[in-house]
Image (cartoon, rainbow, N blue to C red; front, side, top):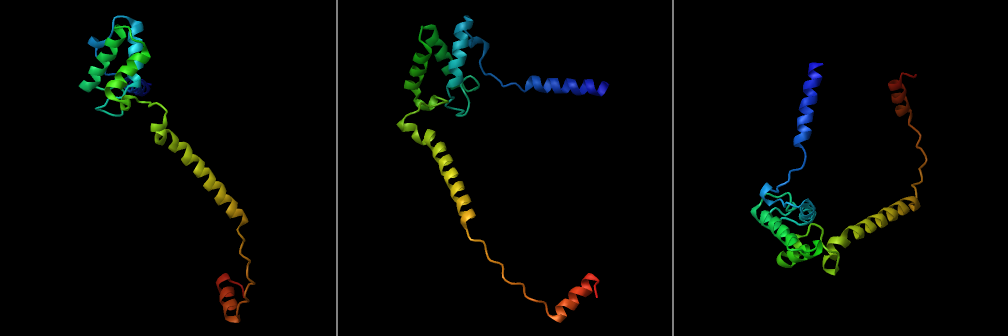
Length: 160
């Protein structure tokens, strides 16, 4: 019973520390919970240009901190969520968006996956179709064994 409690405690501690970290410092948090919720939602959509694969909400980089403060500053000034994102994109480019806009200039990003999927399905169907229609080889007549071969086979199998 003691082993089970110890095991349960270890699992509980591991799960407690397994939650994703958030790099937002206490001095960045807005006093108004509604504004802070908006800031967190916007920050989760913006890429840290230093870390490149993290949102600014998750990044410890100093530039990410500056972007989080800028987002909060724009919210306090009364900007809507869209205006805040537009301001950041105008300043840093579309690269700062974790989910880029769909447009002609992002066709390779958004269009490649469906095209590859369609080509793969076509190749699979084409392969299966050719496999069904391919002629099966006609078996040739079995060649009779010579007397020596038959005797050797009988001696191996124990038949005489």
